[in-house]
Image (cartoon, rainbow, N blue to C red; front, side, top):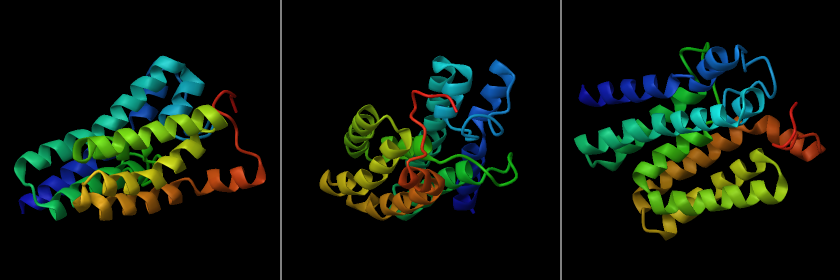
Length: 195
């Protein structure tokens, strides 16, 4: 029964659309209908300004980090921890506050793995930032992160988290499917441009 509580808690926390709330409260806009129409930090930064984008990023990372860290204090069972982590990320993608729609889950995945495999996450973030800097595309950096995460999770010794990392890779590619199509057609917008 306690496992169910933790899963519901993680899903609920993951479902909170901080980007949407920041957009409505701080710049009086519905980010679901403007810019890239994403509730993520990149769209918040484009529409509301850099500092609000950073706030959305930190909060989205926290909603992955906090439930996993708390659950880890309760049990070190890797299956349990993986389920809690997955619940937080799934909550972000399928939010009960947005008719089961949501964001792309990069920040929340980062939060989850900062709690579980911080070294692997650090290296993966380095690749994410490098690709964004070189390409100008946040989506390309995010996809690079998705590929790098299971690799670095394995090579840094967090073997128990590799299945979860692989699952997150699949999910992140799915949430970025429209970005992948735009990248293939040369229609993806640089983070430096407003849509």
